[in-house]
Image 1 (cartoon, helix red, strand yellow):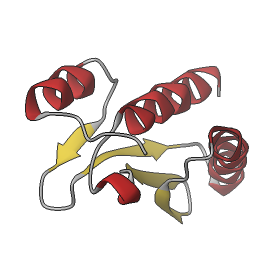
Image 2 (tube, rainbow, N blue to C red):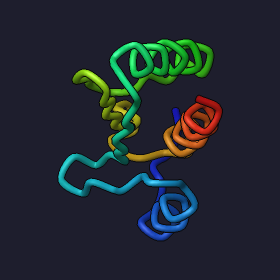
Image 3 (cartoon, rainbow, N blue to C red):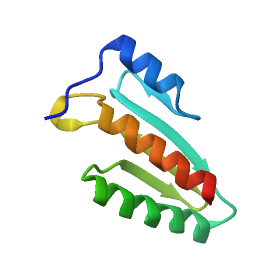
Image 4 (spheres, rainbow, N blue to C red):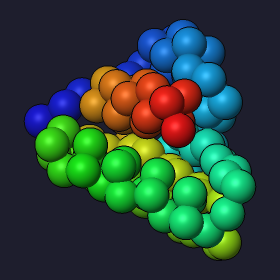
Length: 98
């Protein structure tokens, strides 16, 4: 099982991510993405789904027209782990290529 990041580790990890923020109440890192339209947003979600499946780590997310909101936490660890940070960085790379 993945180990939760310490508060200091979490702070450093989140600071290194582009646009992600820590939600203390939920124990997650979150980011909102905007696209030109629904098709672009849905295409991004499809690419993230394939990436998450390969990583064996799945986001909590929502979509409304051209917006995608993603929250990451490792439920089995009860909070944020390196798996979440790594998936967030991979999602950022997908977004940069979109």
